[in-house]
Length: 295
Image 1 (tube, rainbow, N blue to C red):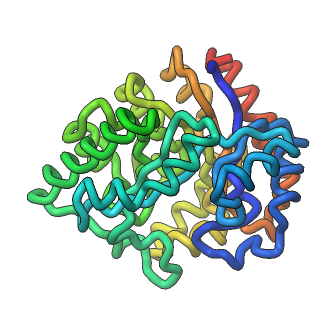
Image 2 (image 1 turned 30 degrees about the vertical axis):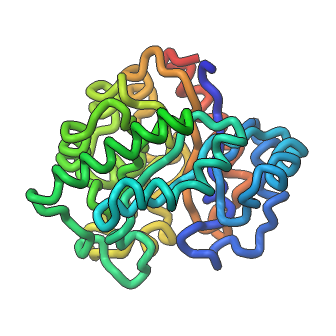
Image 3 (image 1 turned 120 degrees about the horizontal axis):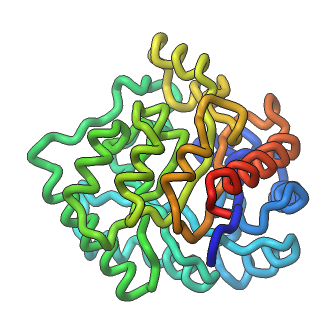
C-alpha cells in the first residue's frame, strides 16, 4: 500500500451524539463518500459488526474497510481483560482485511459529555503513567502478534492524552509495538504542532486523520470553556483546507509514509452538508498530499 484516501462517517452521523445525523442512512453516507472520490471508510455507529453483513454493503459502494476506533480501559483493567473485551472488534477488522486498529483510553474520558467543559478533563497522575503505558505496550504487542493488527494510539480532546507533553510522555513510555495516529485537528486544538509530531514520530506513525480547525471557534471554545461536543456543534472542526492548518508542511514531514489518510471531520450535517464537504475535503487533501510529496 502507498497512500489511499479514506473517510470517516462522523461527517454524516456522530458517534458521540447519536441524534446528530441520526436520520441519515448508511447508504447515503457510503454513496456520497464514493462520489467524492473516497475508496475506504472507517467504522461508524450504523455499520453492521459482522464481516458477513458488512462486506457486501461496503463492496456495493466501492469501499474497503479502513479501520475502527476501539475504546481501551487499561487504567482500570489488565491486559488479559482488555484482550478479551477486544475480541469482537479486532476479529471484525482482521476479517475485513484491515491493517491497523485505533486505540484510545476512555475509562475516564469526558469528550462524550455535552455538559462537561474541556477544562474538567482527566489528567493522569505521574505515578500512574508507568503501569498504564506498560499495559498499553503489552496490549499493542499482543494485537500485532496474534491478530496481525498494528495498534495506533489516537490522542483526543477530553482524554488523558490531549496536550503535546502528554503525547510525548506516552510515546516515551511505550514500546515500538504501539504506533501513533497523527490527527491534525486534535493536535492543533490540544495545543500541539502536527508537523513537529510528524517529524519526531515519523517511524511510529501508521495512520493519519485529517481534520482542519476553525481558529475563531477554537479560541472562543477556550475562552468560554466549552465542552468538546458543544465545540464540535459550533464548527471547531472542518475538512482539510477549510481551516488554519498548513497540511503541506505536515505532509512534508511524513516522507515515505504508506497507508491510509482519512478525512475525519465531525460537523453538524444540518450546518455542513456532508456531500459538499466530502467533495471539498477529498479535493483539498489530494492536492495537499501531492504538494507535500506523498503522492
